[in-house]
Image (tube, rainbow, N blue to C red; front, side):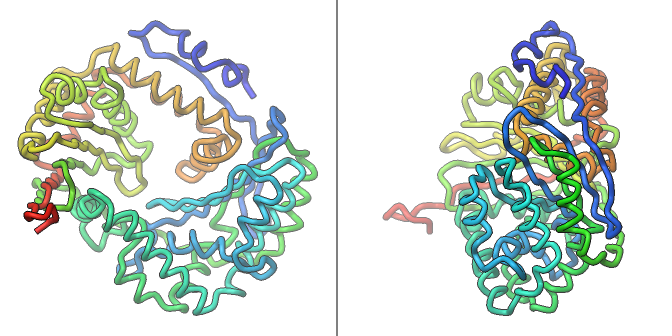
Length: 455
């Protein structure tokens, strides 16, 4: 590992003055090869601690679902932990935890699904056995009863994560409005109740056979392991998994928003909230990096423009958020303003837009861009201190491989962000963040009756 990644973050980020961009390089040495069945394998040796991270990305997410079949990728995030041909039901977590695994998890997004665990180095074979068994032989144990159980679990999760939480329904409406049906980004990754209820065993099995084959997956192994021994284990446990048919190419057209779309809704919440969003440049395309830094200039830290204006000076907002959410079929630039009690959502919207307009007109300062860049660098490097998990080394290799086919793109990405100028940020805002191509969602607290309940 390069010495830059081993140095304390404070020392790294102190290398440049506050008003200048910090230029860093960060390489993760790795080896890449492909099995005969199409499974891509990434190996990165790191013997700082006696742990090894196993990180599997399947190149499927909610964006690969078809109308009427939403939520399937997330459903499999649950089913994959329920057992397979040689792994008894509900033993995946206990087996790994009993072996000393400090981290076991899986996540689903619009563009991908990943599963990861970090285990003691002497338990690498156990992790590979478990992961390979569910890749190759999950359907051997997928019964109607098991499917029904997991559908019920996901429906409950949907209630807890969206329907019964403040602003959860508003977030779903936000994405439905940004990406009208039949676009696969329409709604939320977890899917709809209706589609989950309608899912048949045949539907679900077909989805798995289409997308969860070794030729649509990448396995990253990062940590303290012997490379030759790891290769032998990968061959032992994965080589016999049959190659699947080539997954269908996505036929998606993301239509531009040409006129403002507005939604006004009430919810059982105490505070008003405003969502503003734009469909922007896809991940890694022109304008994506600029808007990532623009989001930080607007709302990261107490010196950011939205925080200073709406929280500190005007004191009309409890909190502000702004960020670029990079996606393959069209990214989303998001601004969220949580107002103080009694505030009018339209006033919150107007105040926030005035700040954005100021940034569009004059652009950020050199110091603002440098500060935004240092924040991004710090988060990225801090993630690399971990072998696995969110933003860990294994995840980073898989992330760049998934989006760009280049697991070693990290240094290029550092250079991509470092090259962003204030003028480029201004131009990206002028080109993409306009009043007539946005979605605005207002959430107003529902009227209360005399008992304090919603009417």
